[in-house]
Image (tube, rainbow, N blue to C red; front, side, top):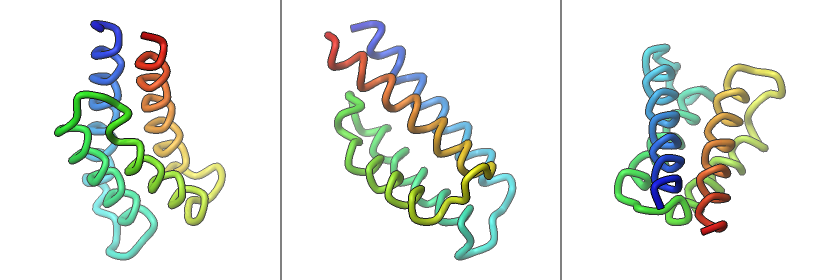
Length: 98
């Protein structure tokens, strides 16, 4: 259980860091960065209220759809998405292996 919580906590930290970094750049309204920030904040709201990475799967799926539709390959925003998704998958994997 401790490892699961550690991975889920790590996911929360990564998510919070990316939200802060994107907020600091002040993305222009309606830009891709602005929309990404909205998706990350939506996931963060769900993560704060959750005890399991499985509880935020739907919001993460929405991020994946946005990523596939709007994020340019090789961009900084792609790196942010990939990082968030990597830590979510890691916390899910550890939950399933319990």
